[in-house]
Image (cartoon, rainbow, N blue to C red; front, side):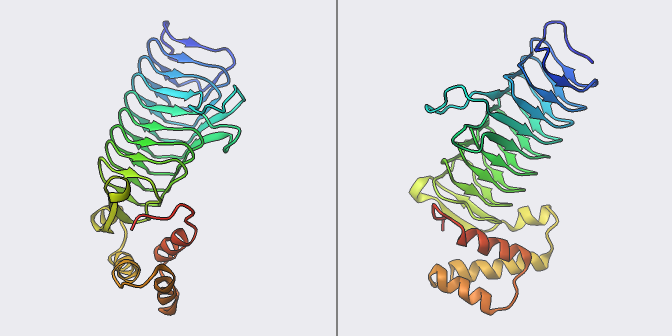
Length: 259
């Protein structure tokens, strides 16, 4: 196991034989690092963190620190991370709280850029991109394939839908809809249509994108209220799975969604 002699590793850790731990890293108790993980210099994993395989942590990442919650009193909580994630410089990832999920959960194949923050009890899916200094407050859910732009912040308990695109410097205080571009700050945030280019790059078919555009027009360009718009979509017959997901997301929103 290539562990630099300046690194400090708690003896209770479970670390795969091929994990690389660079200079001046500190690995706290009950940490598990899967095969192929790489930690550059000065990475700190505070403990109670479970990391899958082939994850890369660039310098000065802070992983599994106590949640920034005034109600936290040292209870045992966790951070769980999947496989094939990249965490760039100075990323911070906090454990969950007993009053939340008890764990912060990050899926697989995510690209979390420099200075980004994932707070306590967040659930981040697979294939998510968080650009530089993107910030998730506590209890945020981010769906698969979503993008959170640079210097954007998502308010606690909000949801970012699958394949949503949040533009840079946005402040999201309500749910951000799946497949749709959302940009702006607080009450000035608004939607700007289906993220056609992003979906094409991800391999979505022209037919699927066309179905989403038609649903978008009914929901947000027809001047129908939300209930009537969803009823009209149902009248058009069984929707594509992506449209069904969009409808279900709208119907399940508790904080309201950005229009």
